[in-house]
Amino acid sequence: MELIERQHFLGAPDFRERAPVINFVLPCYNEEEVLPETASRLTRLLEDLEAQELISPASSVYFVDDGSRDRTWPLIEELATTASRFCGIKLSRNRGHQNALLCGLMSIHGDALISLDADLQDDLGIIADMVRAFRSGHEVVYAVRRRRDTDSFFKRVTAEGYYRILAAMGVNLVFNHADYRLLGRRPLEALRGYREPHLFLRGLVPLLGYRSTTVAFDRAERFAGESKYPLGKMLALAWQGISSFTPYPLRLITGAGVLVSLVSLAMAAWALALRLLTNEALPGWASTVIPMYFLGGIQLLGLGVIGEYLAKVFESGKHRPRYQVESICGQWRAP
Image (tube, rainbow, N blue to C red; front, top):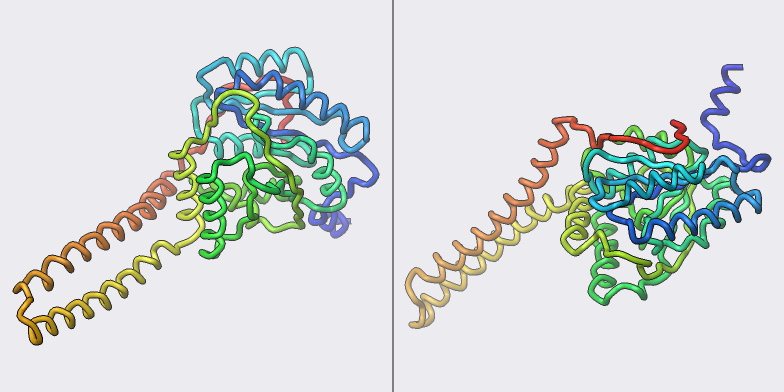
């Protein structure tokens, strides 16, 4: 009997005979303009999925308010009061998109959770395909952008270049995938064991393993409001992904040191040849000024990169919580 129970625990659940409870996790930050429309579309989506018997009627939508400064939380409370399928989590302060998303993933019950943005740029039409893939045995389903027509040229080139750079550094990422995905209960419990404070979930999830697949979609224009990821935040997230998953920048410093040594030797040979074979050499300039500035720049760059990694070690050692929940609303059920 014990062996049978253990095999049942280790194996993926079989949802061919019953519809799974699929809950939705939407991090929100100052989304009062788009939230009513988001709730309306999700209501129609859940009704349609239930009519097709793809999901259980117990499936719900959970909004995670990441310390919004507008009326986002009052709107979430109103939705939870008027419809039993809506619930809300309010963080005590703004902790960033990744921490708000993790709070939802770690706090919500269900056979699987689907994470998506509240701005309606993620195509809700592919969710039925994601659920079908889950019910067929895939425990992780990635929503992958088919193309980037809605992005500016700069954002498209830098985003796709970033994925390729990380892949070249050995980081396992799903190309053109952000945080629109379905996670089954086993991957969610496995994710609970990752305790690093610097979150980059699109890099962590592939580390979990489990059977996975992708579903392609086209990202729409934002329905209302402003983007919560300006250039500065995108660059910070990009560096988070690099510094949290690969020591490659530290190895680049070693390579730069070797390169500088070779360049210095070449410059020394050039200065010596210039001095011995011509009368154009300015005594002491080439051998002093150029290497001094060059080596100074390399050293400062190296110290900066090393400092970033040391800062991560320092912050990790404090073991501070990644978020605090201030209040919840709706018919809440813990995992």
